[in-house]
Structures are given as C-alpha cells and as structure tokens.
Length: 141
Image (cartoon, rainbow, N blue to C red):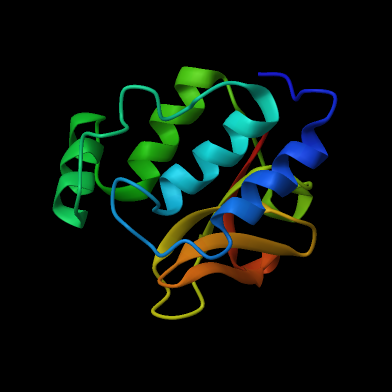
C-alpha cells in the first residue's frame, strides 16, 4: 500500500469529516475510522468486504470470530496480513500510521490513527485524542 503524494491533506480532510461524527457500530466505529483515513491516504479500502455487515457490538464480535479470533486483535491480524502491513513498535509510529491503543476511559482497545504524539480514535461524540504511549500495536501505512 502506497500513500498518495498529497496524503497529508487527504488524511486531514478525513479526520475533519470524522471529528464530530458520533460513534455508530458499522458506520463510524474505531475500525471503520482508521479504514476511512487509510483509504483517503492510499485509495485502498481495508474494510472492503466488512462494511455493512454489522450494526452493533455483537455483530462486530461475530465478524472477528469469522476472521479467526476474538475482538480487535483478530481483526488487526486479518487486515495486517491481507494488506501486508508492517508492524512497528508503537513508539516508532509515524503520522498516518494505524494504531491499536487503550482508550483513556475504560481501557478498552480501539483502532486509531497516529497524528504525532497522540492517537485519534472514534469516541462517543467525535474523535478523542489519547497519548501515543497508550498504544499496544502499530502498523506502517
């Protein structure tokens, strides 16, 4: 997967669109948020075949089960393998890289995008910034 020449502007535009969107399973959740950002930067939809297949947390978990595991870690393994994403230590994540991080509230795992010293994730009422050091995995985009 190769970033487009104007990826920073495309990434910023995707983030701006998502900034005030409310969390909604299957429409605007953490997995679809990072997939939307990556698609804007590269033209590749990492959620192809997954979009529209769930509308609640139970449905999302069922898809993860189909992919060989449970939860976001299974989805991350599937997507990384499918698209040949290189895993990097979270502290080496760069702007635009995909990240799996612990949310500040409740400590649940969430996908997000690295924007420097922070990771943006889809939250209940828009995007939430959490420190990059809360990341547990990262992949080069």
